[in-house]
Length: 376
Image 1 (cartoon, rainbow, N blue to C red):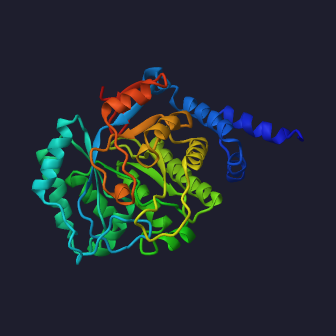
Image 2 (image 1 turned 90 degrees about the vertical axis):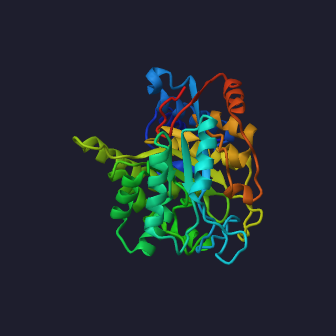
Image 3 (image 1 turned 45 degrees about the horizontal axis):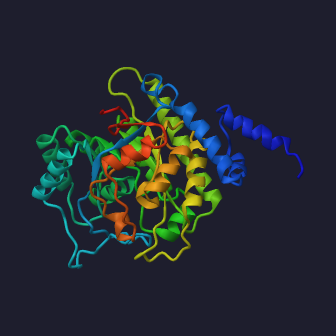
């Protein structure tokens, strides 16, 4: 074997916490999995060392929330989705206020602090319908955070409502929206998006929504759905676009004086394409590729404090292992999950499961809210 001093230099660069570029990320992607995991775990330690009064590396967090899909009617027909329906389908629906109240009451009874509210791109729901829904929830359940509406939904709203994104997001926030999920990110490379979801928001649209939301004081998560038609270079480009946006949002926050501070990405979550019952014909990837991609995400996203494990697609055991590959959060017990389960993946989690999986690795389990503040 030929000794490679440049690789040693790169490994030391990562270990010391310095930023890497795309070419270096591509080189790291070919490391043995355990070696890449060790580097990712080191970067996790550096990112969390000052969190929670200096106890960030002793703690692994989780959330208790509920996925509420307010409608399954959607007109973008993504090839990777098994959840959407057309208005003519007999099992299409739009949630009622009574159904929403019941779901929130059950969530609070289980110790939940938020609902993750997303839906299909319904062509006929009006802006007032959404504002009334948000106002109803916020007035009746002020203690619950509404983590709602992915960027692709906001792009859909812009077209249907014929209003600027700035106004739509501001009005939604005023009505009760608390934060924005990173759904619809898939891969932020338009060539890939044109193949898997040609009618959905493109990369610049997705990032524009996040930029505007952050500028208005809203926080959001960032995601990646991979393992279909993209290349490793595409995954790295996706990570790079997230890092560039996070730099912009954090710089805006640092320069802000008075008033509501601008927001930023709170966490990165990646998961693998689930193929069952979908129209997208692509080879799926397993736990090895998932752990490798998450580890690379932790290393590349040096301006993200939190990386969330994806037990929902990988199962509880791999979700636990992911805590040694850069993740510091086990996600949510997800009281209700409809989209991934429609594609054939049906793992379930409870709070005792969370505590066992976290505790077995020697960490302290703590419930947190959407902003990664500890609830208990």
